Image 1 (cartoon, protein in one colour):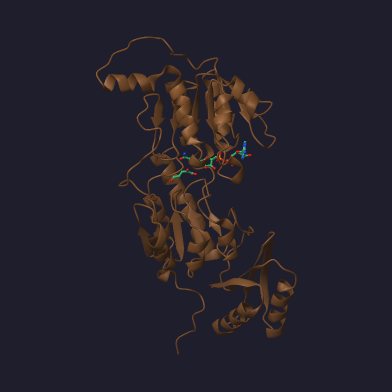
Image 2 (tube, protein in one colour):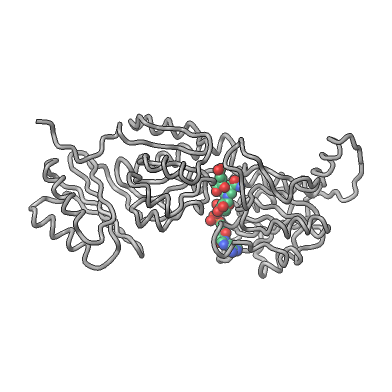
Length: 413
Ligand SMILES: NC(=O)C1=CN([C@@H]2O[C@H](COP(=O)(O)OP(=O)(O)OC[C@H]3O[C@@H](n4cnc5c(N)ncnc54)[C@H](O)[C@@H]3O)[C@@H](O)[C@H]2O)C=CC1
Ligand SMILES: O=C(O)CCC(=O)C(=O)O
């Protein structure tokens, strides 16, 4: 008789990686024994995305793929999602959590890459290089110091003083810039950076303003005509955060009027799905604007690190159940479980579920080797290691699935 299988065989787990994720991720999966890893060069949307995700157990995305509540609802096999980037706004995190799907990201792997680009852009904008570059390409030659400044002694205003903002500040100080920052949280300033009295204070004093906030309801269009009007006339704006943070039409108008002297923009309200699609923006065609195709974090170093880091988190969850550093899920760090069956029970965090789980195990007379529990406001995640036969484990799992409030169960051994 063949042994009853309650743990999903690893060779049948389908991993789909969208948006040209680094091969370093594939190597991590393959080294861990995952044989079905599909690497797609671009994002998908609509019915194509739903169909692709519906067949996958693990997906990896970058910033472009929109994993909405609808996609999650159709993704019946999906056990976990990896954002191979910092931002996780492209995933409906609550829908994923309530479907029992932890989401992981790489919170620091491309921080340095973004910071280096921003610093370079601050220098180029202060020197008027985008305009000079464009003129030279047209056969022009305007050798002049007019409007060209050193960054030394100038003020950089950082909006969002988190991982990227602080790195930008440290690098800018090494060039002799004065650093001012504004954040909604109280932040310890690094080096000689100083907190501005508020956003308006920062805008009134900065020669270059750089945005490093996440996409949240509060940051949607937080930088519009009003904020632009409060900048020093002719100051520069850098946005490598999210395209929804800046009112792009207001920025275009301010560039035309000269209120903004120059801008460097890496992120846009609407971005092409992939490298074959056309890019359109009201900012196109202006000599004083540096446009980049959302490449702030796109260095080989960063992408290689991100591939390894996020793939390792996905493998760890898939193999072991650990949710350490998940962005939407109770975090549980788990030991190895060789020799025992590991049962994962993800449930709504409502009174009575855990006692029903424990009653079941005592009723079945199964010896528990270890139990681990974490909850957040919506979900409880309990992991139970048991010494039992595949038949008993299968029976326990079926009974767990019947407990009201259960969102998902898995068995690992
Ligand atoms: N262009 C690119 O390729 C990349 C873009 N990003 C974007 O940069 C963002 C920032 O990244 P990190 O610095 O790692 O994030 P972080 O979470 O470390 O820092 C964000 C900071 O913004 C602050 N903040 C939030 N709302 C704010 C508001 N309304 N006003 C002022 N401050 C506010 C937070 O308190 C926090 O200190 C990411 O969320 C992502 O959207 C990240 C990596 C690459
Ligand atoms: O590299 C990407 O696709 C996205 C980078 C980014 O915006 C992020 O890490 O949040």
